[in-house]
Length: 120
Image (cartoon, rainbow, N blue to C red; front, side):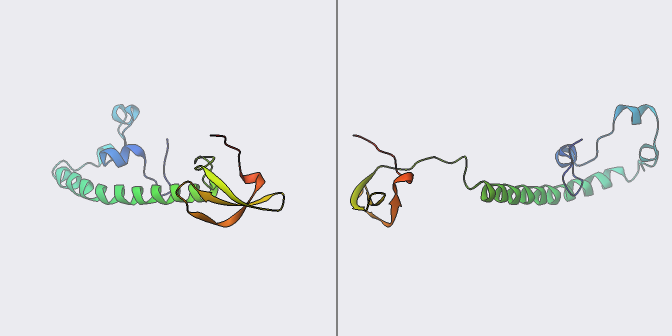
């Protein structure tokens, strides 16, 4: 069964209650026997109210985890190369100053290792 670090399962986040497995239904456990039928509806309403808060916490936790993963992988799944650039100045054999097709000069120099040739 998949659980998050605070014990929430996907089932409990979806339905607001823990799942009851078929063997628990056939063989009574304390959880099944201890149900107070009179107050059950009120308890379910409270659980549904608290469920929204648990879902929000789970969504925040998931977003933090995704940001952490993205920071670690360094954008590994992002585009490998960006835009077309024109070489404006060669600084030695391996360093170049570049300009975008919009005419904006890039602020730093680029090594030849980081540049691909493109013929138009």
